[in-house]
Image 1 (cartoon, helix red, strand yellow):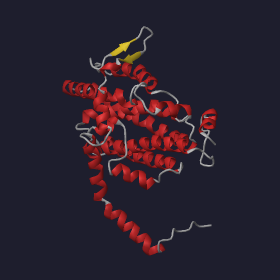
Image 2: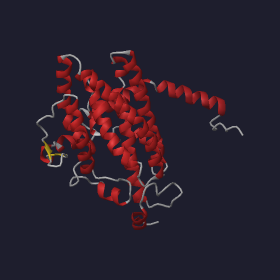
Image 3: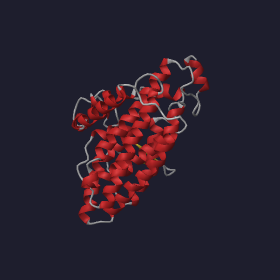
Image 4: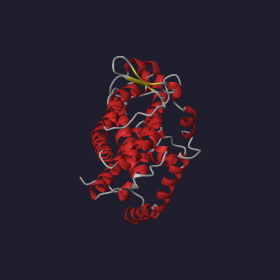
Length: 314
């Protein structure tokens, strides 16, 4: 199948591993799904400290479940990417550990206090749901199937984050002020979650033509603003002056694109500078700390099976 045929046929869940697809499609789909998988893993590492630092047992249990979900999403997506035949799961994980794997801008920044947690668990996860819901109609069938499970669980994550935001914004005056400060710091990053504006995006046109993406970055960003600006105000948060959010006559919202700092966005995307490099190194140190567990398991399997994979029972 050539690329023009792919563009003509592209539709929801149209292509699967049985199809003879051109390398251009396979590489584009791998890049997109690997980026998504990396982001799930790095998001989990970002929130992992709050399993212990959460202020109550219920919140500790909720964060433990959330982190477990996000790691599971990453593994599910690596398998969906692996089914394209371009990279193995091991290659993609190695690239992430070595700083070559790209991931979402919001997960380059550390969470330093409890009041920042709803910025990820409510706003960023809400933005993720906005995009992931469209990906249930992506043209790569294994990716779309993965989104069925991911979206179901992410819905609970958003509710979890919303409950934390409610507690903080109905708490003490100090808690409300600290939450507002966190919101002002995170708001520009959240708006940039959807990636560069359409005129700066290098991958959108092709991904859209072959059915991998269903909506443009700008359309997703505007849909998020239409939903979450009213929600932020509902909980008493004041929308920061920068970047400017324009309210249209029909009650919809859009950002003044010139106010967005794309220099910082593209700098951290290179994985060469703080704060992103710190997040990558943190995950690498955690991985190295448990390397002995993987080595012990591999050694045990080698002794049991002599290097051969165990056979499933009939």
